[in-house]
Image (cartoon, rainbow, N blue to C red; front, side, top):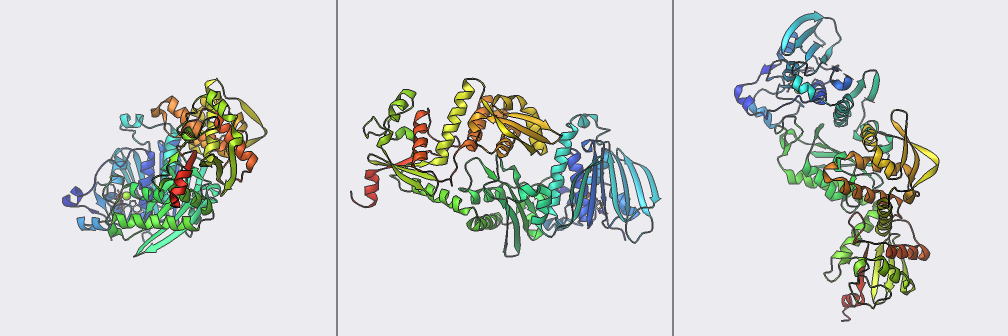
Length: 576
Ligand code: ADP
Ligand code: MG
């Protein structure tokens, strides 16, 4: 019984059409999706030269009859839907019947396929869309597809392929998305002789994530699950120890399909607000299992965007799941401190976050809005430190001082960060940032994104006072750090540096890039929230804060200090 039919004109017209074959990665994605749709339990992929030379996908799925094999290469030929009504609830990856024909049109394609009930396999070879060979051959059941010399007959498109490392990187990240989407299937990716990833069948998302993302990332991830009215959400979220400079590592999967969805990404970010500093994003993987009728996948040619029937309900479900996790997370104590602290500073209208620019300083009367923008004034100010009464450290995060008629609360991390940032900036303006050698050099394994950043940012990295030395093909040895950051954890610092450089920030200009980078680095050398400071250390921080030429906030835009006047405090108790 053959299965593949040509879609009717009417159905074709209702399909969100567009280019499916952009580059090797998209070919790999389409082929693996076909294997998954064919019920494969094991899928093996092989690329050569980043996929430009060869993309081969071998599966043990249901295979095709000889007649279907031929039809599968025609446009709008599919076994997955029959009529336009079927578009309303799609439970397969594919449904448009376009991928194989589009791929065959721009490559040399060889298809070998056998159903378990057939004795012989069918082999078909196509070159630039023309069938050049058909034969019966011996082969195991399942399907084996070779796509060679992609775009060989469309030189203009071939020219647009990037280096094989870049194409490979793209293909690899698609492969990872597919592997995260379907933990139950054994999936293997090779590049030439090199095994890039082998993910044996796993029991759940968490187990699969350990393989795909690596144990080191996995250790920082916390699983959660939630169920509601036939919808199920399975997810993993990083602790604040593992954060990123962009939202790129928030992976969203719907019924096993990777999608880019701003709505759900926003839900994750909203739920995390307050548990990460501004500009930092969690690593998260989210899988939603929904009734296929609830989600329309027929909106984007590559099917990476979807539309929900009830978007707000889905959004709420995701947000609640993440919030529930945060509420019981082992690190939540710190995050709650942040959350409580912010409303405290902003709720009461009379009490607003302010800055050191407005703080009364020694040597001046208690007048408001004393500018201490200049070094001279700062020097003057620093003589009067003894007038600042140390009240204590609060929640290991804030330093409390009384100064005359003011209560001053300093965020110790924001303050330390500001100080480090100013020192780095001053050093940078004076020339090269001094470095300090590590007693014991540390070696760090880098993923491909970071390796590329290391390559392209070499010059800037060394001007900043880092000394990094390639160590084998995928690692780097850290010999020296900027002296200002000598206390930072070298590995985390370097990873963060490279992550920052890996983001495409060049459009914002060199200066903005560098400011941002210094701000980011400053975060590392600095006292953290959660570290208890005693009076001596608290005062030392205050002194340094007054010595620098500081602006209004820490480099991440959070206020460094807030102050409450005695009058404000008395009004809370109706004394005035
Ligand atoms: P679609 O996946 O949208 O149906 P494709 O062009 O990707 O369109 O594939 C056309 C048809 O070929 C599929 O509907 C399926 O019946 C068949 N097919 C493709 N790849 C495989 C495979 N690996 N195993 C079994 N059948 C396949
Ligand atoms: Mg398909």
